[in-house]
Amino acid sequence: MINIKENMVTIKIDGEPVKAKKGATVLEIAIKNDVYIPNLCHSSQLDPWGACRLCMVENQEGRLITSCEARVEDGMEIVTESDEINRGRILVAQLLIANHEMDCLTCAQDDHCQLQEVTSYLGIQKEHLNNLRRKVVEIPVDVSNPFFVRDLKICVLCGICVRVCNEVLGVNAVGFGFRGYETKITTFQDKPLLESNCVSCGECVVACPVGALVPKETLSPSREVKTVCSYCGVGCNIFLGLRDEKIVQVRGDPESAVNEGNLCVRAVTLTDSLIIRNA
Image 1: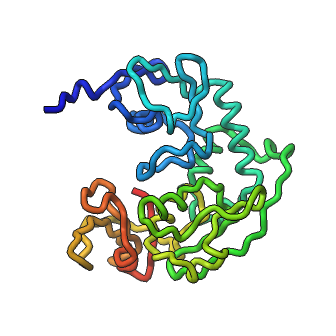
Image 2: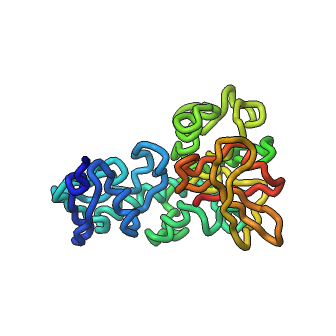
């Protein structure tokens, strides 16, 4: 029999003792205990990667570490907020915003954007970017896919879409391409999504922390109904978002042991008015 107590450790986050499961990351424990640590590249579906560097925290030795990669240890003490930590976070966030299209009010992810949440938390204002060389790369918006839009001018190169497509779905439709300032997420031979091996499952849209991947229809539901997809015998648990008795949203149930929040293209096309949202 497994001793549950032996699998638990005690750490301190900002001076508060917290019980944590062995092997968990500092960021996972912080999220579980409602402690906000800015991040863009974290996904519960993926192994830690430490790409965005926004989730820096300070350990008991005074070193800055990435909380998404740091595994908890008994007696660990973590500081999530200090002048030194925020100086690093602000610099990283400013560099991301400097070359990011900033028409937030017309973006489909407005009020749902993690970059917007990070900049608001750090108190970054437009005038703070005056000393940075701003240049938004002109990349045509890809509207070839029938269900969602891909706008790489808004992409922050967090790599979540690439990793979900490769590691979770095994489709490998997109990857990092080109070099240096020209780096972008691309398909094979940089073709439109419709001409790639994309299966339109929408998992990249769910995972994207900004507005680089958004559904073509963006109506918000007035209520949700939990049900089981009837397309095949797998029995995926889904939530249908309804508005005036019309399905305007389909999302997977992350608590389901069957599909763990994932959907296939058959589920997300239950309605022509497709919207995909995180749980």
